Length: 258
Image 1 (cartoon, rainbow, N blue to C red):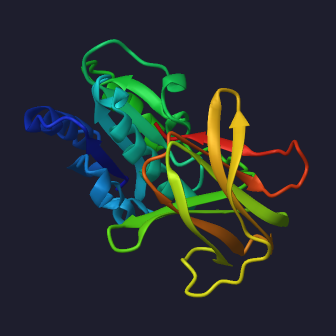
Image 2: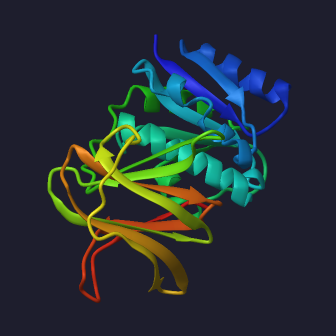
């Protein structure tokens, strides 16, 4: 039986029960939770391990347009999406069930959620459409980079980046509206206990359009099995990262989080 994980930004148990009953009527095993909006406790990471279960075929988010406009909620959902996509693939299906208000477009969402399908929760057809999405093979998207995040009150909030099938001659990571406090290099998939940094750089000021970033960098060589890690305090509106370059212009990736 296909499993669906339901995250409800609404606190209405009646509405959630209605959604779950409708999906179970289509033969889906629906499990889920009510969203906890506590960034300081990094509550966003709570359902991560459950969502990494290979039997979970889809993540659906029940939300109002107002909830999806909250910077804190957008940030928490973005980080949860990032860490799940890092393990399940960037094409892991996400469906937003919109409850009330005017419709929104994927372009109004943050980068990690822009691949989501948006359905009206008050239309009877949502169940059939969601079932069809569950049984549609996930899109095979070739990522140009690896991006993951970790967090709990003990270790703090960390981001991990690295190349996929190539080699980077160093790495750079910048934040807008937050602060980097530590950096490290090590094997991918886990925070390193020890790290040797080659020519580390701190607090570079970078501008991209109207956005200012504070970036750190190292010149360690990174392959598909090694990563660059940065500890971040605060909740950046967006992040900028990629291979380090000493040229004035360089190719970087930008991911919006709020």
